[in-house]
Length: 254
Length: 201
Image (cartoon, rainbow over all chains, first blue to last red; front, side):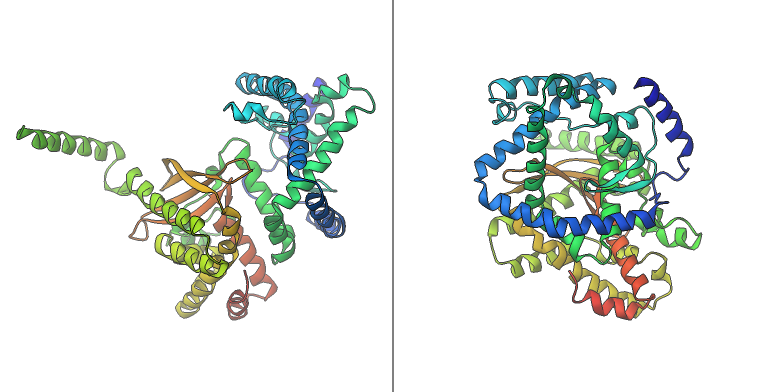
């Protein structure tokens, strides 16, 4: 796996375009087809099921299920934190996992947060690749999972291996994490339903909206260097005349 | 006793001069304190709207008032048009700015009911390039806190925010994408865009 990862680092770094802060979407036609599929999937299945699930299941149980899923995702986060040499994050997530798994009865409750412990790092192998210097790559819309990038897609693949629980748990038990993950996905769909509906069903071009929103948010999460590609809008008119790229104009420049 | 205020004044004045020197002269007239003061006002106004529990239409009207009072609406609207802003007339740009303002107020103002029982806290300010970024955190019931930044500039001649960035997602850049597509689908017809924008959001 280390060799494969090393090859990946080299490969991604080489194929990446120079303009990393803009949207790089060479597979737009395929992505748009996948987006339409995902949108249909959401409309006929995810959205109605999430509404049913959240209205039928009592709030306390729903919250418990979300917490179980979050707790079971911590071991993989700890591994990724170590790979990122983020020892502080690894320590915080480990403490949270130990406290919530024991005092919190297997993660049903969240005493760690009630005790004021640090928020979970919520990381993934895509972030590990970022820390290792792999560039973002192209924008990709994945089936069911939705917006992603080349780097994040490889991250999803490697995260099949970074979760220690998959090695520890046997056949029926390891489905608990998956089931809780799906259920908490439904809870999230309903909690953010106004935002998601606005993007998917009320915007002029839901594909373009999801793409820009996903990339802005992902870049913010990975390092907070969001301001790097952001220019002062008061500078923009001059930049536009000079033929600068659309995203980088400063609207205040005249 | 009587000399106390005088000494404080002198010390304060000296510190202010040092501060100005450190900032590198009058090019950066907007200070962190002023940027923060603006956002403190925005946030206290928003918190008042959230706490008021009034009807949706009143919330939208209040949000529009906050947006126009503290935000630089002309530059935000103009920048969402990109290079197209240069080819339209001043009257068209005014009409567009007006339509855009109502659209933003409806689209984002109607989301305020999700903030019921929540609050926003200003956390800090830093200078970024030619503007100031004021960070705040939104606390909502039963949800992890999330970050909202206001980007503040005085390049319009007044201290105004020119963007709201929620967890890295810029309102201005996101609307720029949306408006760009709308204009493309209307074959660049700014009149059609303005007409549709008046009913959108």
